[in-house]
Image 1 (cartoon, rainbow, N blue to C red):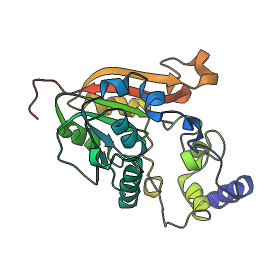
Image 2 (spheres, rainbow, N blue to C red; image 1 turned 90 degrees about the vertical axis):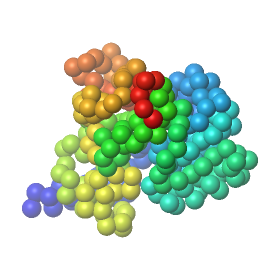
Image 3 (cartoon, one colour; image 1 turned 30 degrees about the horizontal axis):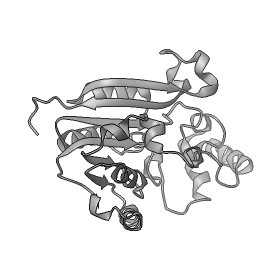
Length: 251
């Protein structure tokens, strides 16, 4: 009964997809530079780079154009990989880009943009990234919004924090009217949502083999004055970090 009432409220509030998280914030900009910093493209020139969760390949293409020696785009969605190959060919960098569902490559660096809130098993992903890196290699990662962000529910963010106020069954039922993919849980929607919080990500890093070189929680612009370690779960826009594989480690 409660789920049905919540569903009816959602239907009344949002009969269509809410217009959030469209990616328009990166229009005309380099997503790599916005999320990882302007220096990253310079640091990756001449290197073998894995783009983990490459999607349609746009960041892999940018890396190749900006001087990366080779870029390996990894994604578990074959349709995305097919689009990435076409995009790389049209951009004239197909010889510098490889797109695959998994890899045994030996890379100098791994980038991951907007992935860790979606990976089904983020701890296992950290292990894979570690294996892909040469000793001394670096992971450059940025992701968000995290789960307690006002729009941390992504598609389910009918309004700020709606994904925390409404039950998962009600939200899934509402979504099934808009998308007919048969998803029954947050983790089953396209891309998946794993409820990633800043605290959980910190625990995953502590349990990994990586050395954390830097870790930054970047505040939501309008909430920056109240952003601190106590409030960051609710006031962080994106998490950004660099992780190192020690040079003395076995590849």
